[in-house]
Image (cartoon, rainbow, N blue to C red; front, side, top):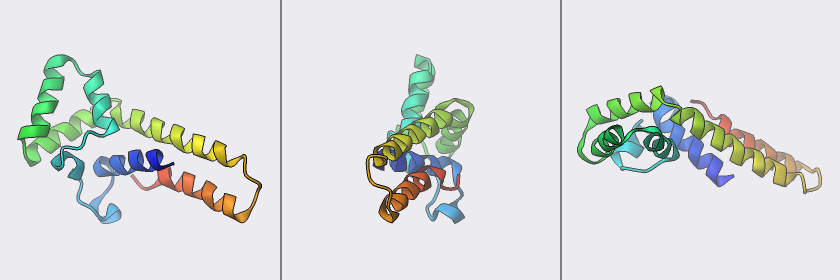
Length: 120
């Protein structure tokens, strides 16, 4: 469940709004975090493009973030990351099926849905 939540949180960094998320967008970029969406973009890129992405991550400012965000949105990286978050969340929900039906289980099931359905 935690992995699904983290992937979704990483997606909010590019797809969310600052007013809704309460954090400035692009913070993962500024911290040079290697998120799943970025890993996917690197995997799908040819070597010159992958080198450009690495350069943007290590030596650029706000303009670099805009370029990288465009690359991410034009690739399948966002959809891929969202799909993986849904997979992890679904596995968490499936595991909960082993528990007796109870208010506690229902709360846990709701949490698994919340993690991946937060506003983008």
